[in-house]
Length: 125
Image 1 (cartoon, rainbow, N blue to C red):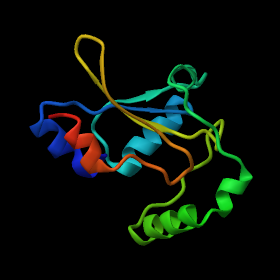
Image 2 (cartoon, rainbow, N blue to C red):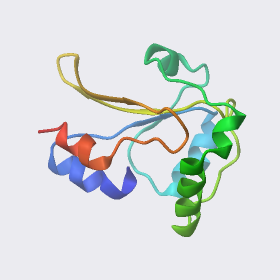
Image 3 (cartoon, rainbow, N blue to C red):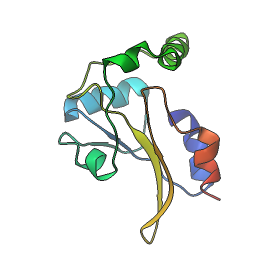
Image 4 (cartoon, helix red, strand yellow):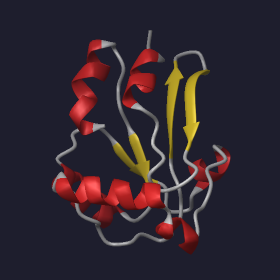
Protein backbone atom coordinates (compact mmCIF):
# COMPACT_ATOMS: atom_id res chain seq x y z
CA UNK A 1 0.00 0.00 0.00
CA UNK A 2 2.81 2.36 0.91
CA UNK A 3 4.26 2.22 -2.61
CA UNK A 4 0.90 3.20 -4.09
CA UNK A 5 -0.16 5.84 -1.56
CA UNK A 6 0.35 8.66 -4.07
CA UNK A 7 -2.02 7.00 -6.58
CA UNK A 8 -4.71 6.84 -3.90
CA UNK A 9 -4.17 10.48 -2.94
CA UNK A 10 -4.49 11.51 -6.60
CA UNK A 11 -7.97 9.97 -6.50
CA UNK A 12 -8.80 11.85 -3.27
CA UNK A 13 -8.70 8.65 -1.23
CA UNK A 14 -7.04 8.14 2.13
CA UNK A 15 -5.39 4.91 3.24
CA UNK A 16 -5.69 3.24 6.62
CA UNK A 17 -4.56 -0.19 7.80
CA UNK A 18 -5.99 -2.36 10.57
CA UNK A 19 -3.68 -4.92 12.12
CA UNK A 20 -3.45 -7.34 14.99
CA UNK A 21 -0.99 -6.93 17.81
CA UNK A 22 -0.40 -4.26 20.38
CA UNK A 23 0.68 -0.64 20.05
CA UNK A 24 4.37 -1.48 20.43
CA UNK A 25 4.16 -3.95 17.56
CA UNK A 26 2.28 -1.40 15.45
CA UNK A 27 4.86 1.31 16.14
CA UNK A 28 7.73 -1.00 15.20
CA UNK A 29 5.91 -2.10 12.06
CA UNK A 30 5.18 1.52 11.08
CA UNK A 31 8.83 2.50 11.49
CA UNK A 32 10.25 -0.53 9.68
CA UNK A 33 7.79 -0.32 6.78
CA UNK A 34 8.03 3.50 6.64
CA UNK A 35 4.29 4.10 6.44
CA UNK A 36 2.74 7.45 7.18
CA UNK A 37 -0.94 6.63 6.88
CA UNK A 38 -3.00 5.54 9.92
CA UNK A 39 -2.34 2.10 11.37
CA UNK A 40 -5.05 0.93 13.73
CA UNK A 41 -4.71 -1.95 16.18
CA UNK A 42 -7.55 -4.43 16.61
CA UNK A 43 -6.30 -6.72 19.37
CA UNK A 44 -9.74 -8.29 19.88
CA UNK A 45 -10.28 -8.89 16.11
CA UNK A 46 -13.66 -7.13 16.14
CA UNK A 47 -13.21 -5.59 12.69
CA UNK A 48 -11.98 -8.92 11.35
CA UNK A 49 -15.11 -10.71 12.62
CA UNK A 50 -17.44 -7.95 11.43
CA UNK A 51 -15.98 -8.09 7.92
CA UNK A 52 -16.09 -11.89 7.82
CA UNK A 53 -12.35 -12.32 7.38
CA UNK A 54 -11.08 -15.87 7.42
CA UNK A 55 -8.31 -17.79 9.15
CA UNK A 56 -5.67 -19.98 7.56
CA UNK A 57 -4.12 -23.17 8.92
CA UNK A 58 -0.76 -24.92 8.75
CA UNK A 59 -1.57 -26.40 5.34
CA UNK A 60 -1.70 -22.89 3.87
CA UNK A 61 2.04 -22.64 4.59
CA UNK A 62 2.67 -25.44 2.06
CA UNK A 63 0.75 -23.89 -0.82
CA UNK A 64 2.80 -23.12 -3.91
CA UNK A 65 1.29 -19.64 -4.30
CA UNK A 66 2.38 -18.78 -0.77
CA UNK A 67 5.93 -20.03 -1.41
CA UNK A 68 6.12 -17.89 -4.55
CA UNK A 69 4.85 -14.84 -2.64
CA UNK A 70 7.35 -15.43 0.23
CA UNK A 71 10.24 -15.65 -2.23
CA UNK A 72 9.08 -12.49 -4.04
CA UNK A 73 8.82 -10.61 -0.74
CA UNK A 74 12.25 -11.79 0.42
CA UNK A 75 13.80 -10.76 -2.90
CA UNK A 76 12.25 -7.29 -2.48
CA UNK A 77 13.85 -6.97 0.97
CA UNK A 78 10.80 -7.65 3.14
CA UNK A 79 11.06 -9.88 6.19
CA UNK A 80 8.65 -11.49 8.60
CA UNK A 81 8.02 -9.39 11.69
CA UNK A 82 7.32 -11.05 14.99
CA UNK A 83 4.17 -13.10 15.05
CA UNK A 84 1.09 -11.40 16.41
CA UNK A 85 -1.69 -12.82 18.51
CA UNK A 86 -3.08 -14.89 15.65
CA UNK A 87 -0.56 -15.62 12.89
CA UNK A 88 -3.25 -17.45 10.91
CA UNK A 89 -5.62 -14.49 10.67
CA UNK A 90 -6.11 -13.60 7.02
CA UNK A 91 -6.76 -10.11 5.83
CA UNK A 92 -8.72 -8.27 3.23
CA UNK A 93 -8.88 -5.03 1.30
CA UNK A 94 -11.84 -2.70 1.39
CA UNK A 95 -12.83 0.68 0.02
CA UNK A 96 -15.51 2.61 1.85
CA UNK A 97 -16.93 5.90 0.64
CA UNK A 98 -18.79 8.67 2.43
CA UNK A 99 -22.43 7.95 3.10
CA UNK A 100 -21.74 4.39 4.29
CA UNK A 101 -21.05 3.14 0.74
CA UNK A 102 -19.05 -0.06 0.23
CA UNK A 103 -17.16 0.40 -3.04
CA UNK A 104 -14.87 -2.63 -2.98
CA UNK A 105 -14.26 -5.71 -0.90
CA UNK A 106 -11.73 -8.51 -1.14
CA UNK A 107 -11.48 -11.23 1.52
CA UNK A 108 -8.19 -13.13 1.41
CA UNK A 109 -8.42 -16.90 0.98
CA UNK A 110 -4.76 -17.50 1.91
CA UNK A 111 -1.68 -15.56 3.02
CA UNK A 112 -0.64 -14.47 -0.47
CA UNK A 113 -4.14 -13.57 -1.65
CA UNK A 114 -4.13 -9.78 -1.87
CA UNK A 115 -6.44 -7.61 -3.91
CA UNK A 116 -4.74 -6.44 -7.13
CA UNK A 117 -3.75 -2.80 -6.84
CA UNK A 118 -5.32 -2.05 -10.23
CA UNK A 119 -8.68 -3.29 -8.91
CA UNK A 120 -8.42 -1.16 -5.78
CA UNK A 121 -7.59 1.95 -7.81
CA UNK A 122 -10.30 1.20 -10.39
CA UNK A 123 -12.91 1.07 -7.60
CA UNK A 124 -12.17 4.73 -6.91
CA UNK A 125 -13.45 5.92 -10.30
